[in-house]
Image (cartoon, rainbow, N blue to C red; front, top):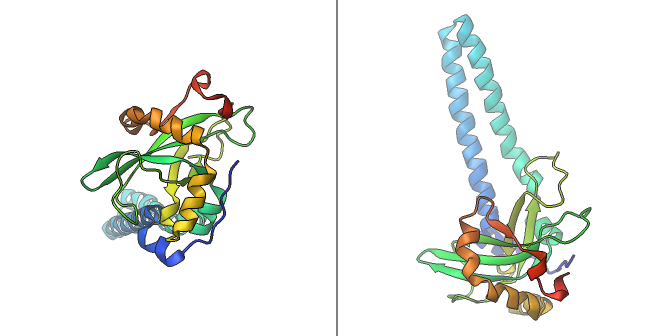
Amino acid sequence: MRPFEFPVDKPHAKAVNETLSDIRRLQWSAVLMAVLLGAGAAGLFYLAQPWSYILGVVLALCALMSLFMVVWTPRKVGSIEDLYAKGNLVPAVVAEVHPRGYTLLALLDIAKPHASKPHYALATRTVRALPGKEYAVGAKIPSVSVLGDRTSRDDGETWQMVSVMPIAWGTRDSKVLTQATAKIGDVEWGLLRKNLSMAEKVRTSDKQYVLLDPAELPDELH
């Protein structure tokens, strides 16, 4: 565990943090789906047939579930301060530069608290922008891990959903970014640089992360 505390700049985060943008898009999608399902249910009720009433009730219930997602999603994820506070400080580097963004390659331990040992993995996240300047391949982007499960019943040793969130999305203070970068050991930065060629394989994998062979890890990470 390596938490990293810093004062989150909320106006800045609301403007540039793509995790928040993803949540807002998910909410709007749920609203649109609720409207479509509600309209379908109304049309079926208008037909006033036994079978249409049954289907109308089903669509109405689905519409309510979509509206529930609008409220539930931000509560499940938590505030931006919660995301930064719960995540561990992890190294990430720019692995690919695209016309409209970057691919970040990160090294993180995706083991759950009850796991018997660490489970280090390479993970990628494609981002549209990183505040401050243009970045080249290999640039250090200190980040925090964002880990979770798709269901509450998974009791495996590793998290199912793995992502990272750049600290630069939470603050404009260059001193904070320098401190975060320095807190991550050279061994971890070096391991990422060594595996830059893995970025495409990781990005195109089903889970967008690839577990590393413990035998290939530096002694410091055992």
